[in-house]
Length: 149
Image 1 (tube, one colour):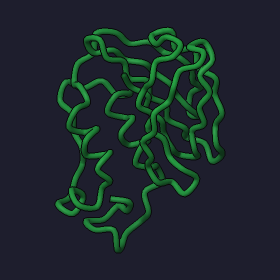
Image 2 (tube, helix red, strand yellow):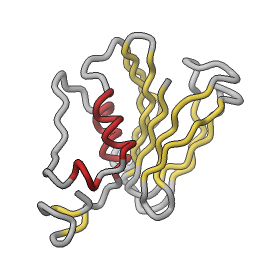
Image 3 (cartoon, helix red, strand yellow):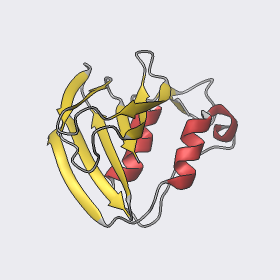
Image 4 (tube, one colour):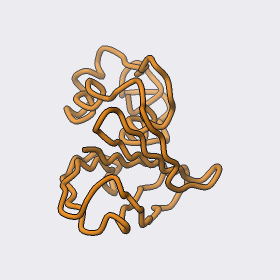
């Protein structure tokens, strides 16, 4: 829910975005994935969120810290088998522009890119890697990103 309530018509508005919440499934290591859902979430949530929740792994073969600062933001990469997940969360009130070094992908590869738009709505785009040593991303305030392939 967008609010701390059983439905989206009352209660306190959640500070973090949907993509921030999805990114925590990778950021926090737990062999059992837990997503807090009310019955209406299955129809209220965008399909991209439900699809991501269905396929995100619960175990990891490799973890790499990419960037971060305590209390401000964190960017982490995790690998499950041959698939990498790069996630970032921004706890600040301003957009965060980062240039990430992602050597797990090669020039010309296309990755799935989950991000928030300026209205805090989740988006799923395809991102072509032009230079793995300098992948530019913007994480919206209290938002998140996920790159995966």
